[in-house]
Length: 284
Image (cartoon, rainbow, N blue to C red):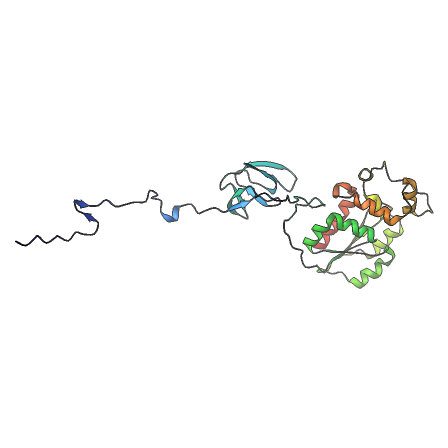
């Protein structure tokens, strides 16, 4: 007798009947599964929004479990580092603590939010002119980072008497605005009359009330009680050195003053407001 011929089994059927199908434990359809959310280091200066409160600000501090944001009004809020907890340019992200490394500044010397690894912009046609080299060096020290990002170049005049000729040669226009910062801009003075003559739709002249830009540095930042009164007819800078007991070397005195300026906090508000006004005007 021939052995029985084995019966063909349908696919999926075992010796004792049909095998149970193997299902994935996750039965969620692929189109309903949450997409992976990128993890972004909470680097200082990164601007994000916390969707629950609508608070939007730049990262100023991050530690284990929390991140501190600062909005454009200077207000601080602390939020937990939760998964999918923030919006970055409208996209959901998970903020994580940055890897250890040298700390990066969160603010520029002017008080603006620092932009890590920002590249300088190609220079605009517009310019900001200041009266002299000391003015230019002070503006560079405090606003240099901001000016490079905005592409604004600062030049100096070596005196306001040449301003009308400079403005005429520059020929300000809609795409080439000109801003000028003048010392001792007080109504009725020579500086005031020159500024009035050249100011126009695309040229703005502003000034501070100080005899020289030295006075725009707060005395407290220099460790002095105040700027001395210098008699008329005497060179003001030399008179300051004499009154303060400094060597009568105005170049050395300026280097001493400039070294004490670390940020906008070391400058008087009368100068701060005017420089910010010029930057806004030139970049408008």
